[in-house]
Length: 391
Image: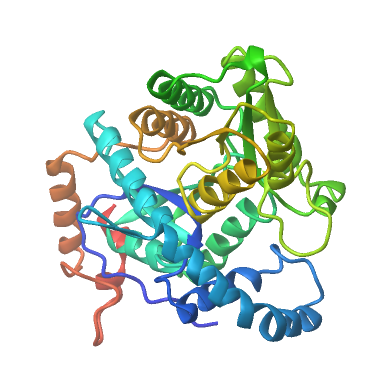
């Protein structure tokens, strides 16, 4: 099997540590072609759709994509950001902001850490970002999927892709994985702060008169729960812990599941029918928050803030409030830093002193190494190719 080309190695270059924030993905643009390309990659993943491949290929390419690509393109058009400092897919914009803010915070604390974001489907892809990190001298990568609740349909497939890329590397970096953080105190604190800040600005629901807080998580087929996926349990735990932190009683908040796709039964209760029922019985106010989405995206901005609001009000509901996701709020960036640092323990997070790097370079050159080694074209001596000579 051919391996990926190794980046040029320079003796005296420090080994660095990186945090790779991985999210689901997004199309490059809002045209049906761009959206269709993204959906094809996403829905072709056997961890996302567990149907025999031959049958699913026909269903996806003949029945689903020709119709869904155009409909989804219209939906993306309604949420696409086109402001001076925020242009593109909301998920990508907020993911990049999170990565930038996290790196700034960790660097300010004295940690020499590189932070990058990648998408499981679409761009920036996991392979391209991992290669870019290697070119920066990264030898240790903490993979932190932006899925607080673990699922084989999300977290596991992100890990699969990281391992696939790792298998193509000749000189592999060290790797650590964050499986989930659904009950991490820093994550729960950020959720509590976000809801509290919204209520402080817009007023809180009157729970005594029957107002509700809906905690809407992305749904998955119920079959995954029956086969051992812990996602459902972790969503319920996050909801319970957040409800307790907000001082709410059971019944004042509801955990629901959105984004059902296809005819199979998914985790219930479903978000849209719940909103419809709350509207039908004349609920005065409903607030909807999506704890499983650390960044706003199509599923929150269009499906909840737009469609969900319409569903509730058409059914007879009165006051609808969508509480934005954590995005790049300072409390969430601080929470991300806490989560990351807990998993980075034992790895060096400070650059070596320059004289240590200079000494390493001098020793390597005394053994015949060139300033840049292994991957330059043309014949080189074994000494020039040896990273070990710098030891």
